[in-house]
Image (tube, rainbow over all chains, first blue to last red; front, top):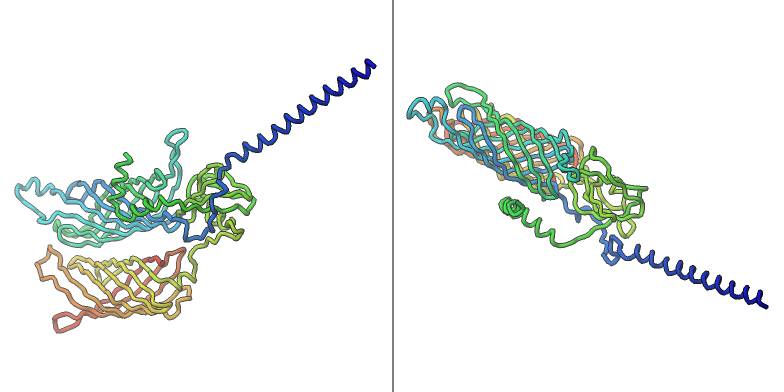
Length: 220
Length: 250
């Protein structure tokens, strides 16, 4: 009798503990499911639209303003300002249009000659259209966690320079380095040579006008 | 600093401003990966390292496009670049393939607008021209051309609002064209020479050339034109012009 009671007691204890463990397991399982379902990264109620190519915003155009220094041959180095527009055709190739203004300084002849002026109109304006090639695309690592996409590119193009009241067909070539700071903003350093034939100082020659500029651009 | 940038944006023009304002309307586009996986690059270029992959049946959000690369946001919150080639293997919410393709030869033939720049020789002067063309149909278009030519003696500005272009075989890889146009030409003698007066004359020209679709929206073009300038003197002046350049079509 006593042994039967003992067996009953043991069975009851085991049964209880068993159900308790099962219950604990059961209550644990939905809890884990809930954690997964609680925070889906993409909300299911967001209506998913059909993607058409034309719907996706493109950022192939870049518009910028630049400031720099322009060394006008024989007429000193002077500030230059302007605007630029880029159209990115492929990841390698882009087309760039630029318009810039500067003002020529005095030649050493004018400074030493005392009252001699060579030019009545010292305005220097240019525009050009160039083809650019992203030669060395890369990344710059500013800190341990910050990287910016960069590119070293070459450009060559042609345009017109309005200087000393005359127009000059101009070949432009150079190189630049650009850093894409954010989705919509980039900074470029540009070095280029504006070449044109001129005879303003009495001899026919090809003048090289070197320009260094900082161009801040915006994608849209 | 950011305030300064925004001021610059405002300076740059209304286009940038309008792009900022449209950023306020959330249009979200998702695609489902159908390939075993797609690769996410750190930059919009083939050489940028792959830092993440998204497996089949996962969704990615498309943010914007730069040339052949799409900025995407994954379900895990990773942002990076996917090539157009890989993205064209993903599925729309309806299960259809995402339609992403580059402008092809057919789009080139059916183009409406064409813009470009050309350089060359204008009877001894160096010339640079900009043009915008509207295509009435596959064969006929009109172009507006603004050119500037300069040499050691004079510089010229040439404007043409009427320049009819006929392209008899638009589907050819190297498509020839014929032009007939008229406009005005202004001659400014160089200021270093004994001054003769500036003058403006009307001209008419005919020409021919060739155009070829290079890649995407890019085309190359070369042309010859023969100008007859109706001067106020007894003789008309004849000028030959050769130019090469590139253009875009939309």
